[in-house]
Image (tube, rainbow, N blue to C red; front, side, top):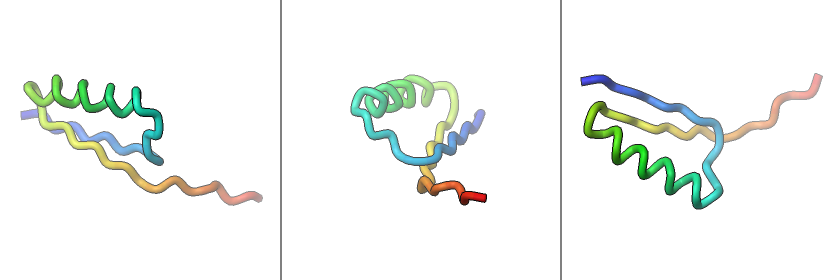
Length: 47
């Protein structure tokens, strides 16, 4: 079975985006294993 890992920076704040991710995750889980990882957002250093 295919494994897909999605790594995103920051969290989805908008409700409609979170709902879309949940719906697509539900649909794709029939065909592969999907894992979503959210990492904390950091400011880029100024140079």
